[in-house]
Each structure stands twice: as C-alpha cells, then as structure tokens.
Image (cartoon, rainbow, N blue to C red; front, top):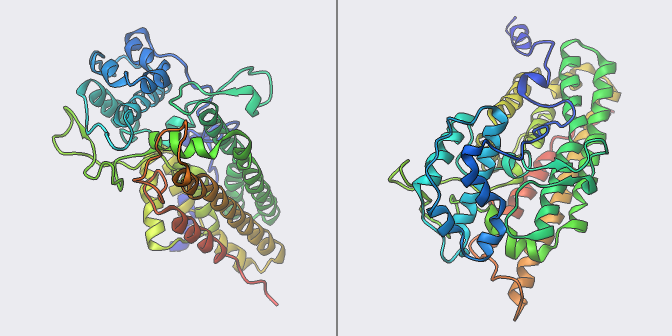
Length: 407
C-alpha cells in the first residue's frame, strides 16, 4: 500500500510545462530578451561594452560611476533573467579585470545590491551561472531557419572573442540536442506508471539517441574553441570565489554582508540535463562527487531543480526493468547507460585537451601574445573541483549501473 501511495506522488501527467521547460528548447530560455527597460540603461551600456572595458582596464572605474538601481521596475521573469545575466557578467569582469593576482575583494553596493536582489527573486546565487551564460545568452539570427551554429549568436560577451562565442553556442546546441532525451524521460516515467512496455522501450531508445547526439554536438568544440584562448583568457571569467586559492576567503558584497560570501564558478555540472538522466537511470555517484553535484543544483533555476526531484521521486526505472523480466527493456536500459558513460568519457578527453594539455603548453611557452594564464585553478574546473578525478569517478560510477544480462 505504501509503494502504491508513492506511485501516486508522480501523477500520470508528468509534463515539461509544469517546470518551465520548453517543448522546443528544453532548459534553454525561449527567445531571451536583448533589452531591459530604459531605467536600466546604465547596466546595459556597460554590459554591451564589457570586453572593451575589461581589456582596457576601465571596467572598475565604469562600475564605480554606475547609479544604484533597484530591481522593482523589472516587469517579467524574462527581464529578471536578463538582469541576472547582465549583472553577473559585470561582476565577473569587475572581480577578475586585473587577473587572478589582483582580484577585487569587495563588490561595490551599486552592483552587489541589485545582483543580490534579482538573485533572491529568481532563487539563483549572486554569481554567473550556466543558466545565465548559456541558457539566457543566445539568439537566432533568422528565426525562420534551423537552430544551428551559423544561425546563432550570443547577446553578451567578455574577453575571448570567437572562441568564447563558440564555447557558449556549442553549449547552447548541446542543450538543444538534449531536448528529445528530456522528452523521452517524461514519456518513460509516464509509461512506467501506466505499465506500457512498448512506450517505455520507445522512450529508452529515444534517450540513447539523444545522449549520442549530445556527444556528437560536444565535438563541435574542436572546431570553434581554441584551447589556448580558453585556458589563458576565458577560464578566469568563469571562476568563482569558493574553493579558489585566488580568493580564499570569498567576496564581500557591499551593503549585503560584512563577511565575505563564497560561491562556486560556472560548471557543466550546473546543467540540469545530466542530473535528470542520472536520476532517471538510477546512477549513484560516490559521496564526494555526489555532494558536489547536489550543491550544483542550487545553481539552477528552482523549477529545473524541482524537475530533477520529481524524477527522483518517481518509481524506479531500474527496479521496473529488473522486475519485468523483459530482455528488450534490459538491453535498452543498458544501452542508455553505456551511451551516458560514453558521453562522460568524451567529456574527459575534452577537459584533458582544454585544461590539462593547455596548461602544460602555457607553462612551456616563453613568450606569448596571450595573458599569463591563471595558476590558482590549474588542475581544477571553474566550479572548483579537482576536475579529472571528479569526471573519472562520475564516469566509472555510470558504468557500474549496467545491469547483468540474465543467462
């Protein structure tokens, strides 16, 4: 009876709309805004010139002249998301304008107060997160044409030029490639509740194809992102002030707290996609990796975090597959897990190229047109984790989820 009541927790109508997830765009914010009301022009004027102000070392002076504005004139959710993107990008530039050796340890109140205000409204931390840089920072050049990298552009930037643009837009396309997989998870959860083996089998096949498409799409990084520029120029502006030796005590948000506050930098672990797949497939990570992934859910829009929790509370797919005795379902489940492990193995090769190999090259370079690369996070991701050991642990735990084929 208790099991039955848990089944009822996840209704037969698990749907994307309940969690502000788009049928077409998934976790991407559909049609992000480019402009805020005129009242916020001082923010927009700085955000639109961010790369120039950072590279000319003028950003801090520009921010210090900025008026203190309240967020009360933001009229909609989409305006609030744009404000969070703009203010958090300015914050990253303000803190890291002079590189890791001279970080700004105090965020001035005219930036700190509105950033914390809009963050509180949205349920997001007051730092640049994946939902800003990627989910809210894209536009289609021609809405009538397909969503591919030639028909996409970013709204705001910081130093990094075409490589930064490529990094953001390939990640947008990864989120787009995940849409059929997210829909498949919803279909599968409902199929389990309705005990429809055919619908569940179809959903698992669709999930596998989506994961494989994500892996292929991630490969576009090689074409659009220069590893040396990513390592020496871009990475610092994604770095936070938690588990970062360059800002060991955190950042003081003036007018908010007299004590420094600590927030992790941007990380692929802030994307809801793989969290949803892990929960659905019943993959259990080590305590250390699992704790970090759990913390990253607080860096997602709350409705997206709630979607993960809804999948977590649904009846177990692994239990259903094992108890069904259906060889086709077991095989389809294992193919999903293998595809997910394959994606994670591919991610390890990408991180090796863009972080580990790039770091070794930077050390061996006598002279360079590139800035001195940041040392503080040398073997760590911008989220602050020892990146290769974390990614290998996550991949290995994924492989452990493969179910034995019955004789």
